[in-house]
Amino acid sequence: MIQTIIEQLERHRRFLVASHAHPDGDAIGSLLAMGLALKAMGKEVLMYNESPIPAVYRFLPLVHTIRHKIDPAADFDAAIVLDCGDVERLGTATADLERIQLVINIDHHVTNTGFGHLQLIDHDACATAEIVHRLIEKLPVAIDVAMATAIYTGILTDTGSFRFSNTNQSAFAICAKMIGQGTNAYEVAQHVYGTYSLGRIKLLNLALDSLEISPNGRLSVMTLTRRMLRETRTHDEDIDGIINYARRIQCVKVAALIHEQSSNGSASKGRRHFHVSLRSDGSVDVAQIATQFGGGGHASAAGFSAESSLAELKAELMRLAEGIADKCDPN
Ligand code: 5GP
Ligand code: MN
View 1 (cartoon, protein in one colour):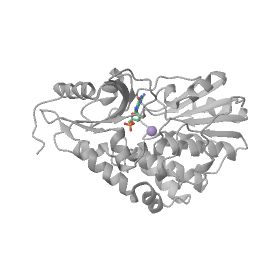
View 2 (view 1 turned 30 degrees about the vertical axis):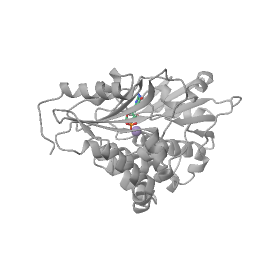
View 3 (view 1 turned 180 degrees about the vertical axis):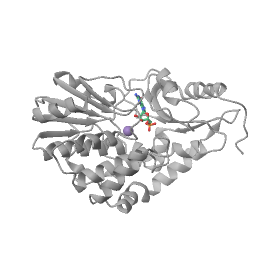
View 4 (view 1 turned 90 degrees about the vertical axis):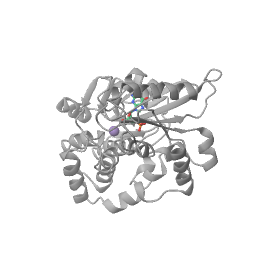
C-alpha cells in the first residue's frame, strides 16, 4: 500500500493535508511534516486544521502556515487525512472531501473506520507521525529541521514522553534520528511541558477538586465545565494532560474526564454537550467502551462525545466500574 500511495503523491500536484479538530501534538506534528515534505517535492499544498493551534505548539517551525479555512472554490487532486479514526474528526472539512477524487487515510487508531480510497493504517505505530516518517523516508526529500521537529513532537506527545504503552522501538529510533537532523529536544520539552499559564494551574486545581472515585476504587471521574474555564480564563487546549492525574491514582483502572463543550445552542433542554476522555492502566480496553458510546481511540486512550445532563453522564460512567475487577482502597 505504501508504494501505491507514493506513486499517487508523485503523480498529483495539488494536495489538501488535514488532521483532526482540537489537535494534539501528533495531529499538528504529522500535518506539518507531511505538508512540508510535499512542498519540498514542489507540490501545491494546503495544510489545514479546523481549530486554532494550541499555544504550546506555536513554537513549531512553519506552524503559522497551517490554515483554518478551505476555499470552497479550491481544487485539489488529493487529500491526505491524518490521525483521524473516523472522517468526522476533521470537523467541517469532512464535507470538502466529497469533491476530492482521492482521499488518503493515514492513521494509527485501532478503531479506524477505513474511510477514504487508500489507507495506510498501522495500529502498532506509536503515533501517526511514525507512519508519516516512514512515508517521507521513501519520498525524494531530505528531512529538514522543521519536518524533524514536527515528527519528534508528534511522537513525544503521543507516547506521553515515552511512558505510555504505545512507546515502541521506533519511537526512540526515529526521535534519535530527528535530533540528528537538528531538533533540539530540550527546547521542544520546554515549549510543550515547561511553561503553563497561572490559569492552567488554577484549572488543574478545580479538576483535582472535582475528582470522584467509584465505590470499588477502580474508576475515577473528573469534570470540567465551561464555568470553570471561564473562571480561570483558560481554553479547551489547557485541559490537555489533566486526565493523567485521574489515571495515576492507585487502584484506578479507568479514568474519565468529562469536558463540557462550548454550546452551539443545539442541545435540547436540560442536556449539554460533553466530550469524555478515557484512559486505562492497560488492563481495560477503553477503545471498546468509547465505541459503545459512538467514539473511538486506542486500547488505553479513547474518547467520545455525548449530549446529556451532567448527572446522567456521570452515573453512566460510574456504572462502568461495576464491570471492572474487585474492590480496592485507593487511599
Ligand atoms: P482524547 O481523550 O485525548 O481526546 O483522545 C484520546 C484518543 O481517543 C485519541 O487518540 C483520539 O483520537 C481518540 N478520540 C477521542 N475522542 C474521540 C471521538 O469522539 N471519536 C473517535 N473516533 N476517537 C476519539
Ligand atoms: Mn495520534
